[in-house]
Amino acid sequence: MEAGILHHSPFSTWCIPKRPLRHFRSSSPTFPRFIINSSITNSSQSEGYKGPKPTRNFVADWVSNNDNVARSLPIYIGGFSLLAVLLNRAVSGIAPVADAGSSQSRADLLALGLAVTNILAGLVWLSIRPKSISKVDPEGVECRWISPNLPDFAVSELEWFWQSLSAVTCCRSLVIIFEDSCICQIGVGAESSIGGEAEIVDAAKLIKGTLYRGIMKSGAQSYLANLSLYPGKSELPFLPPNTQAVILQPLGDKGIAVIGGDTIRGFSTADQAWISLIGDKLDATLTKSVTSNTLLTRDTGR
Image (tube, rainbow, N blue to C red; front, side):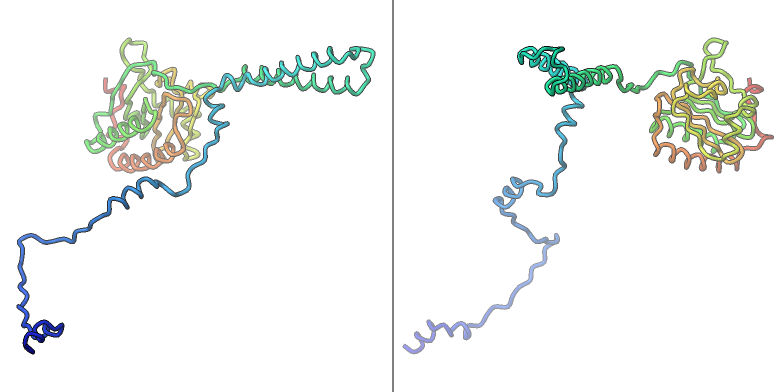
């Protein structure tokens, strides 16, 4: 009986020998499994973003979406105020001339002035509107000419320069003058007197102009945001006549890149800085491969 009591006592577990643990190796590594409570996931999704949210200016949104109504609003307010003043004058029973020096007359006169001012302001808002800026299709012919005497790596560099500009900016025309010669003309060019062909770049005439000399003297990029406002447009007859903007990028002290765009103020500040950087890269490549003795101008190449 004592043996039975001992077997069922809580201390009997210390007397029972335990089997040694066996370790099993699996062919694939095991990773810990995480069980995500679905209720927690649903609650987190329902709560959403708890951070600061941007505020909206509903007045500015309404004005931008209703431009014509916002510009006409002062006219309606001024007209309504003018009618209200005249109606009040007529109903009040005050003589229009006899009591002209009374306080009521002075208040009416001030209200009339404010109403007329509102009407005039609305007329000005309707007459003056911001000019929409859009792209234009250059008027000219497509051309792609690179000096045949340039080495292959220089030609590849020029093609990369053009592809980069035309892909990420509003550039539609590219002309490069180096060592007093035109070595590249790609994009849309002005149509020459010979139908179907682009205007040949007269490098000697461009070098004598004020634009080229000014760029070489300053050594800095020049941005003509609205080409039609600059008298120097006449020095760039090889560009399409409706070219909207031009960047003149110096290539060291040996040349210049003329970049024509199809949008007024189409080159942003970031574009200008980036063009300056890749212009330095192009200058380093051309300096190693281009000399005045190896160049073949377009005039003699035909």
